[in-house]
Image 1 (cartoon, helix red, strand yellow):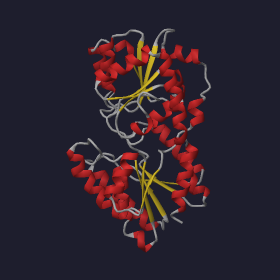
Image 2 (cartoon, rainbow, N blue to C red):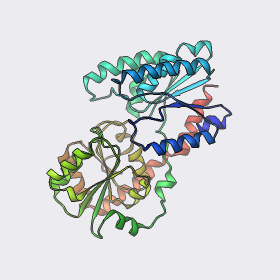
Image 3 (cartoon, rainbow, N blue to C red):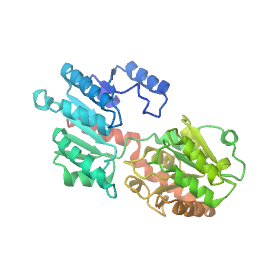
Image 4 (cartoon, rainbow, N blue to C red):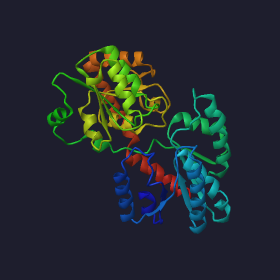
Length: 363
């Protein structure tokens, strides 16, 4: 939006600002909307739902988008999120030739990918194949999706952009009192802090790390999860059942992720599916040695044994990786420094330059 405003465009942000499906607190969403308004962005409430079974909301959002696109003569529509992008492309498709409209879709990780369940290929691949007819520019955020799109879709412009961009300065040089932060978190002098950042969902696979904590039974090892979600109670019960409840700390929604990353000894990212994970990139920017699952997106960032460790999502393998990190403090610090160097190419500045090129294609 900042790029488009700098090019002199009028910008409308159409999104669901009143959804309980988002783990970001409502007050933060409201603050964001007000910040956009102050910049001159028009805010339009559309009742998009992430849940495909939410039929009433889906139909309502289709109607709302039809009214919006018919009323406004947009030159560019840039879509994000699978369902919202699908609705928007279908609705706006007929205006492409009539209004010389360009439609851009950023795929934040296809639901069909190497190793994905067959039903994902059965449902999501045909849907994206059909919707590719209404897409002028497809942006992919990782190498696997880029190669797949080039093979499968007949879209004129299929581009690779290295993520959504991260603030290298913010995460690399967070200014705060380290000892006070450790005290706030309840960390002792000899404790080792593991950190994960992400919503408490099955896909984020925090349960595997908790099971690993139970296997290791190390009272000096503390696992912190920054995030909220429906699985909070289940994760607490899992920790209780595995004898590590006092060493597992669920922090909820946090605004001090940069500081938490700086305090952490090891970052653990056990996801089952990702596009190009911002949380992992932020940890790398902070110079934290990372353990991550060997999946799409993560493999674009981590070269196992050099700037981190890639492992399976199984708790036994995660436990082995944690033990190695704990026993090899010097080597893990080297990994952290290499991760910090690696992540420079994913900075906000470099992504902005790429996106400026994308929007210039639409002029």
